Length: 80
Image 1: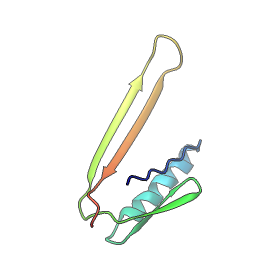
Image 2: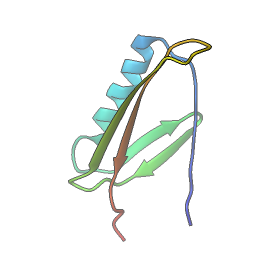
Image 3: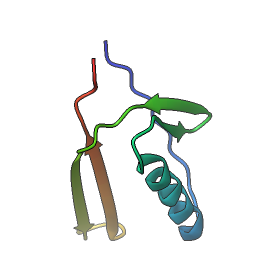
Image 4: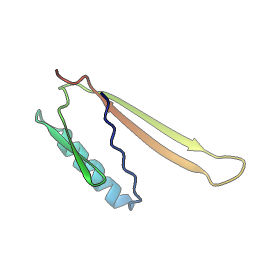
């Protein structure tokens, strides 16, 4: 069974940095971490080693505004 929780919101740069810092603090150590996604909190148990992927995109379409984005993906095999 796969459960996915998604949330999207507009934040100031400072608020986004605070959200990333909070996530980083939860990831530190070897205890369970709690991730907030909108109004839901999800408890996760990362391994000592995680897969870290980062993608940076710059798009300048013929029509419309230039778009830039950063996607960060953390993965690990859950303990059974």
